[in-house]
Image 1: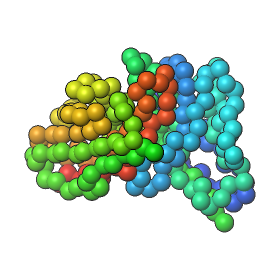
Image 2: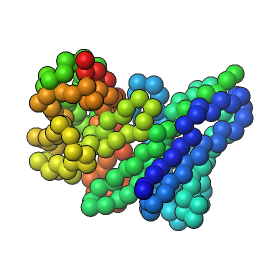
Image 3: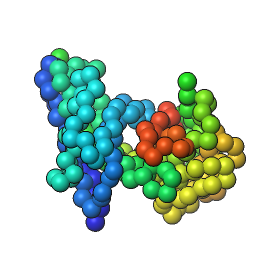
Length: 114
Length: 114
């Protein structure tokens, strides 16, 4: 069956450390993978998109890797800050029929402690 | 710049009552529009998408329906709500002509069916 999995347990880290979140999927062949941030009671906000032919993508303190062989994406936040505390969602981008069908994981909650 | 609005922000409805949630997008033309539902601790579930006025595709069979009466207006409806319809409803849009694109989410509607 098709699945997309993110760590269901919250990730607690100390301020200044690097947070690493994992997204694994099975039986999908996404052309792209996206990461979103969601704060409580709010809609998700797009962070990064990585294509299947890209190994790594960076944006400021964020870094995403995409391994289509392992069917895994890693999302890193370096020099983490308490303001980075949120739920992070990965989404497989299955472009089909003229629109982007995003399959979302359940998300991983990150808590950065001072 | 583009903005997306949803209303109401919160809604408490009795079982069996009708539902109408509205989403409007400003600052863009012919967007792809999406309705998602997010249950507590779960990922976003795509309910409906639309690539144009009057063009609605359903992803999940249920007692909900969607309509797109205008280019930038997307409505989610139900004739009779069920307890299982409770959740966080999110509207999103993306550029209509892209091969891949980010999705931009509205603030969401928290629906509680009692």
